[in-house]
Image (cartoon, rainbow, N blue to C red; front, side, top):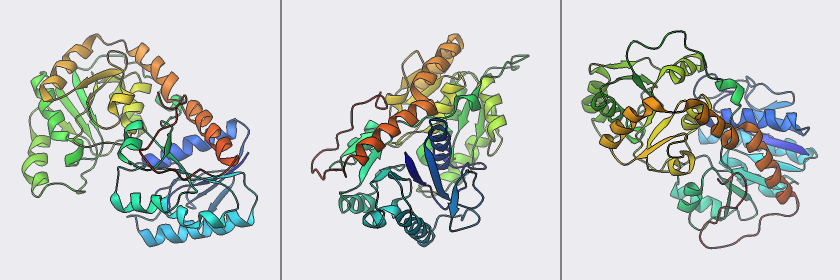
Length: 358
């Protein structure tokens, strides 16, 4: 197939540091190419692809809706002038140009529910929508979505062999340091389990309660036994996954996916997560981690993880969350889209039943 893959203009493909959507786009691009499909990537000029098109030579940060509109408008013009079997967009502004593309449009929702975007999607019924978890699709209500879980390149997360165990057991928190992610809850859980906590991430002020960063987050990062290293690159993440007792995910929101869970599992590191958002779909109890309801439960699960079968964790993650599995699922979506545009249906979101909806 000839596929037009439209990323965002805000982060390069692959991302240099932060960029979950763009990392997924990168691994899907590689999977499609290995499967013999021709892919044209519409991203930023500092991206990497055999067939790359761009409106902006470098990633534009912070995100700007007008920049996104210009990015998608140029992509739409080039797609309409070309010959593609399907267009797969990861940027919502692309939906405004659906009728101009001369090819069916598949769009993946990468975000938590936003009312303004949900209204926008309802006005674009000819698009084939893909949710990244059943929970995300459920929360979209009347939007009919197929479900394809993210997948990543397993080779990136090959487990490291530790020549010496850490001096003391520790837990790992990885993600943006914001209220919805609960980093201070991870610090409390590790302390109750009698362990240190390694924190990797950057402070984000998105929707934090007033004064939370000063009164809650900063003291939590400064408490004894907590080591904050800032943002972590791939090498630092792999070292932490290899040595940590578990990755802690004390989320306070309906997270639509959570790539860090998959990264940890692929490295053989168990995940201990609150039972929110997509976590119940991703974490298999006793196989790839534990689901808990509060800080006390997280501390108990962290202590139990000392006896965890990390090889079995990675094997299961390879089955469920590889980029090859994701690619197969999207190729099936593309084939259905190419057979006719999505039928507009009102009612509760009904994720498709296929291998990506485990």
